[in-house]
Image 1 (tube, rainbow, N blue to C red):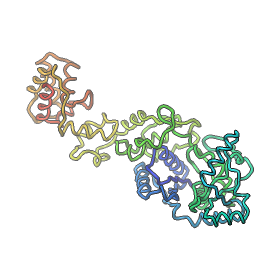
Image 2 (image 1 turned 90 degrees about the vertical axis):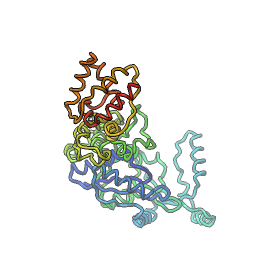
Image 3 (image 1 turned 180 degrees about the vertical axis):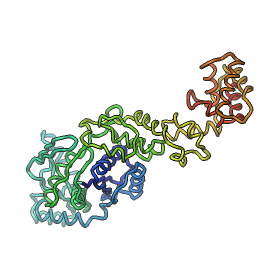
Image 4 (image 1 turned 135 degrees about the vertical axis):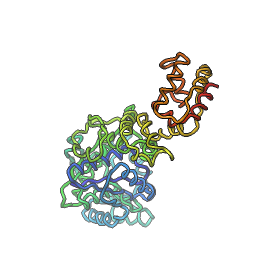
Length: 443
């Protein structure tokens, strides 16, 4: 079994593409196969080395390993050889229309109530006509002549599919600047690297019908790969999940404090009906099954991801996060705050609370109470028993109990309505810092 993930290095890795990568990786692991990484980088205007490097970092952070990466920009001779074969067989033909001319043709067909399918005008050009166009400086682009049949296959996720090829325009395989396009290069690569399963998003279903026809036209000795198309992700309102939402780029989620294990578990469970449970990739691979995916779109819910991320953070040892915590943060600090974090980045605020300076909210109505609290702070050294000693003394002196006692103290000491236990925060904070904040909040 051989699968591949083939991103275009034209921007950051997005959660939708990361989900496809994870599914391919786990499917290969489950069946003892090989996971290839390939960069579809034949578009010189948009592909960037820095994007490729960023994708490698993101995939590595998620825990994936791979064979490769292969780069299409280094395989141009293979595509030219395949194009020559298609020309000789009459399946690849030159066309000379400009984009404006093509758009006018499509508009005219729509006005007549007909589908905007290319009319194969390029096939009707004589050699003399082509020569005149060449002499006039027109450069051809190249289309693949589709078969006059219906392509059918059994999809491993969305079931039986049938697409009549005459309903489609002959696809462009090579631009007028001689650069090959994805539809073409993907098939040449999949044949050369003996890919057995193509797992990708449902937006490629029509491409699959074209690529099956192209696979057979190239006369490969290998059997067709099996295809699996994952229904696309939607946003929380059920709309299309836009790749332009920077907050859903993998590097942004990582920087915000989403943990790799939480994101991986969440993405591979989306659309399966199973509850996401924190687990390493190897554990996920043991029970991975493509047939568990629904045929309906899956909804990406940030709230659910944060809940899962919180569960992951609650069990992480200090050694797993030490290099991402603020400088000076201790193991005691981490064990104190980890149960109250949705994102690892929130630890920065709590470190500011215990080791830096914050401005507590003004609580003038509680002024007398807070001044009394400051005066009753016990001498250091402090430990986890200090809070009880202090709060018991304050309760006895003021007659307060429960929320009326604890709520103003928490607001003054941390600036927050809730958070980690004050019994553990107070020793980290220290007497001088606590006294200053109580007096500042008192006004």
